[in-house]
Image 1 (spheres, rainbow, N blue to C red):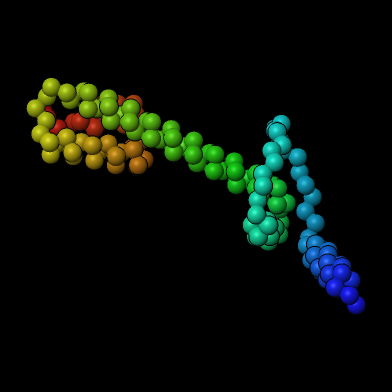
Image 2: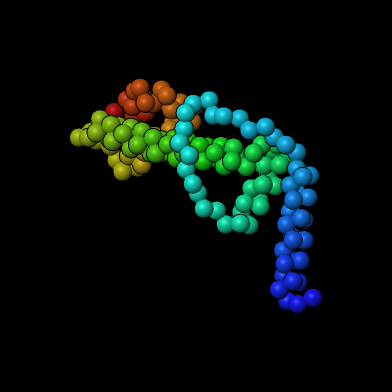
Length: 141
């Protein structure tokens, strides 16, 4: 066999191997998104596609559905992070503005900022948004 024939035979064997791997994967019926959407093309390295396919098989979903899920989850996380940072800044500014001109020491101010951060990161967040004055209770009075 010449070199060209060997290359062709190798390519055929590889294609057959991949086809048999595909045949072994369980069929997962594709589903349409509930809401309308737009198709967006994304270039992904081959080795990452293989990893995606393996994970999708384990989860019994189509790789495209898994990619869509991951992208949407990441967008939601980013939105929460951005909104959270904005809310935190607004609360901090409102509280610091409310104590402006009072006799608050640097230690009390630092304690107040710490209370704001703790409140934002706790279940008391919703209450703190409604009334930043509650956070300043007992400081600088």
